Image (cartoon, rainbow, N blue to C red; front, side, top):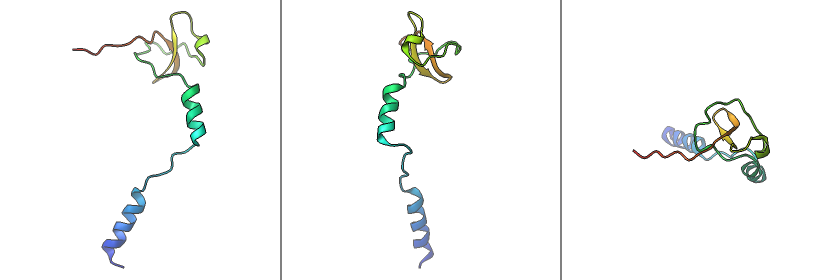
Length: 80
């Protein structure tokens, strides 16, 4: 076998798309059960939540870089 063909075959095998772990059902359930991402910086990451009911009035449960926290979750305008 030609060495160039062997290298092309190895490259093709390596670059083929890999299966994503988890079933489609798990993916759908995760997107339903996990809160949406925060639209603004959470400020402090001390008030964690699992449900909206865990947050005080005016705060929303959302997913941020520090976990799932209660925050104001206001829209941020990035107009310059």
